[in-house]
Image 1 (cartoon, rainbow, N blue to C red):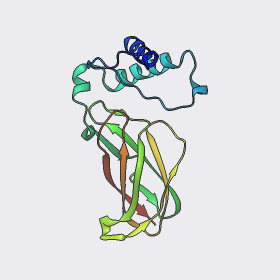
Image 2: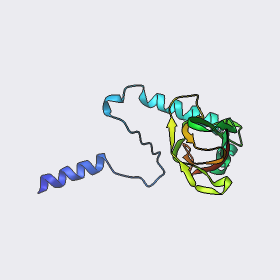
Image 3: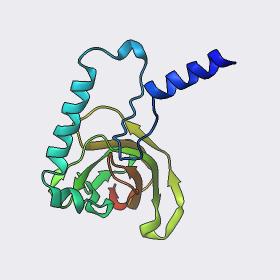
Image 4: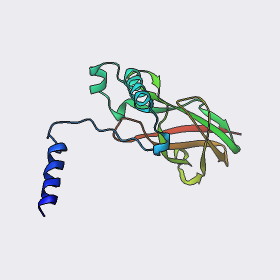
Length: 171
């Protein structure tokens, strides 16, 4: 048993464990085959660029809030009918900049503004497009006011961006 005790003691000297002080935490998901010599540098550069764009100084960073984001319609109206594309942009209201790479996890399109919330239609995400512009395809079965409800997560922010946008479908 003496040899095992010596091994444990040697290990404990070499790897003393946590100091109790703050330590940076970074989690990167991806296979080991994706990690190369420059990966950490590239990720660090990307993090610094993101901070520079969205939190250029300590005051902006400290005041960041999920309430500072909102969706806006690119066009306020569409023609009624099948397979119509709706485009929205996600804006940071403090900086006035468009926000790319949000994760939109909830969508609903219904006629709630005209008192017919039970009249809902499927909404499908349309891939591609310019950064910060999010597109959806839906069938507008009749003319009238339709409500697009969105829920999204923004990188680096806690909470959920929730928006209800009214689109007019015309004959």
